[in-house]
Image (cartoon, rainbow, N blue to C red; front, top):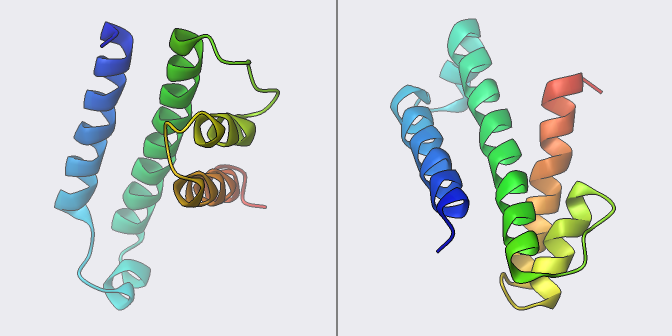
Length: 105
């Protein structure tokens, strides 16, 4: 496996572990604690950004067509049977959520 891909996977795993350590037990706790809410949202942004980066790294390594946008990268990976179509859709939704968190729109 390409070192950059391996490093990106490790980065995602690290962020997921760190998010797991701070996430509240329920929605009420999440809403109540501003600092935890902000930290969870930032980790979510970082994880999604890293997943997009990983998608592009895989696309480049495999020599697939370069997508015009981030969400299209997931479609390419699904078409090439790297991920399932269902996962591609969930990742595109996650990318949309990341945009909402990052840009508040």
